[in-house]
Image (cartoon, rainbow over all chains, first blue to last red):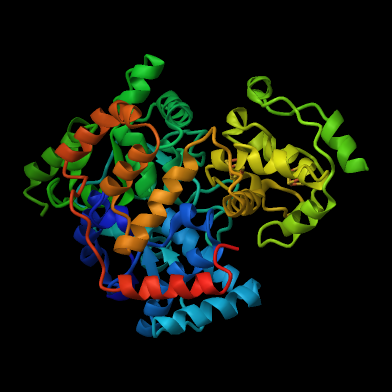
Length: 300
Length: 213
Ligand code: SF4
Ligand code: SF4
C-alpha cells in the first residue's frame, strides 16, 4: 500500500461531484493506495479567490499546505482546480519573497508554519506514475472491450505546466482508457475548456464551449466521456440537457470520472461507484460489462 | 510609441471580434497614463507584459475572446499605451476561464492568464471593475463562503449570487438545480470546518499587511 495525504476538495467531498469522492474511496484500496484525508482541510481558494485578493488567497492555500507538511507525505487531490491553485500558491511563495514573508506572519496568527516542503499531486498522476495502469489492468474483472470513450483532460490537469505529460498534446488519459480495454476515440476538443465556474455568471458562453466538446466527442463516435475534474464532470453532465435545448442537439453522453471507469473494469458495483449520481444515465452504455461480470460470477 | 501603433493598426485576430467590437463602449480619447504600465509591471502576474511581442497567439487560442471587449493581446497593448480606465473597466479579465491555453502557447512566457487575474485584482481594489459582467459578484460570494465556513457551500454561494445579481435568472438554472438535488449532489447544509477561526485570524492579519494588494 502506498500512503498519501488526501485532499478531496469541496465539490468531491459532498458537493456536486460527490460521486468522484465516493468512487475514489471505492477503488483506492483495490489499486493499492491508502488515502488519509487531510484533517480539517479548507477550500483551496480556487480562481475566484486569487482573482480578487492575492494575499488572502495565498493564506487560505497555505493553511492546507502547512497542515499537510506535518504529515510528511505527498498530498494528492482529484480536483484539477485544487491541484493547479495549490501549486500556484507554492510557486508564488517561492518566487515572491515579500508575499512569502507576509504569508508567514499570517500563518503565525493561526499557530501554523510552512516550510515549502509539500508535494501537491493530482490523484490521476499519482495513479499513473506510482501505481501504473498496467498494475490496474492486471486486476481487471471486466475489461471494457468495445467501449468507445472520449478522454477529456479539460484544462488544469496538464496546464499551465506538467511534469508528467505534454501540455500541448497530452496522452496519459488515453493510456488509461486503452489499458482498461476500452477504445479512446479521436477527440479534438479533449484538452479544451468546459467553462469551469464561469457556468454561473456566463451561462450562454459556457453552453457554447460545452457544445463544441460534445460535438467533437460525438464525431469520434464516443458513447461516453471520461474526466479527471469535478467541474468538467458537472458542466458536461448537468448542463447537457441545456446544451441540447439551446443547440437543438440530442447528445446523450454519460460523463464518468476516471475513478468510476477504473471501478467498472474492476467489477465494482454501480452503487459503490455512485454511477447513479449522473444526470445522464450510464446504465445502458455500461450494462454489458456488468452482465459479463454476473455471468462469470465475479465482481464486488 | 510603437506599442500604441500596434494597438491602433493591428487588425483583430479573433473570429468573433466583430461582435466584441460592436458591443464595446465607444472608445474614449483617454489620455496616456505612463504610471499605469509601471503599476501593472510591478504586480505579481503583470511582469510579463514587458516581454510581449504582440504576436496574437494568446488571442487566437482564447476560447472566450469573442465575448471579451478587448482580446488578451489587445489588453496588453492598451496597458503599454497607458489606457488605465479602458483596461480596468473592460469585461475581458472577468471572461477569462483560466484555461491556460494562452499561457502554454505564448512564445515569450508572458502568462496572460496570470495577467488577467492581476487585472481582476487591480480593478477590484479600485472598485472600477466592469458592471457589464456578473463574475465579480460570483467571486465575492465564493470568497464569502470560504470566510464563513472554511469551505465552499455551493447552494449558499448560488443563493447569495442570485440575490445580489438577478434573482429572475435563477429560474433558468432551476432544472439543473433540481436534477442535481434529485441525484444527491447538492448539500443543503453548509459544513463548517473547525479552523474557520484560524482562517479569519489569518485574513485579518493579511488585511493589516496591505490586504488585497
Ligand atoms: S502570445 Fe504572448 S507574446 Fe504573443 S501577443 Fe500574447 S502575450 Fe504577447
Ligand atoms: S486563460 Fe483566459 S485569456 Fe488565456 S486563453 Fe484561457 S480564457 Fe483566454
